Length: 102
Image (cartoon, rainbow, N blue to C red; front, side):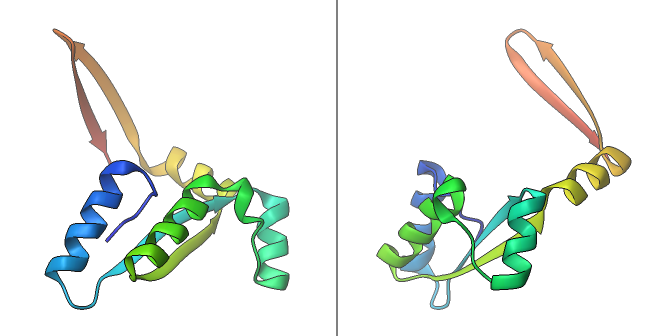
């Protein structure tokens, strides 16, 4: 399950742990170029710079769920998103409608 460390995903993680035997929490972390180079070399992250990662790790530990972060370089994600995703947002009567084309 995807765990950001926020309230919604924490509740889902708690319920998933109750329902499923082998729950795995996955958190996506997009590191800046400097931190990604350090991560590749030393396999460590300055966890306090990445709050979602820090919170998700703490929550996983507290709930007894295996934690498996997905660590990616931010600059590659930005380039790929610009190439592949076009998103239009319409506001109609206070409701946001998202149309995503991939």
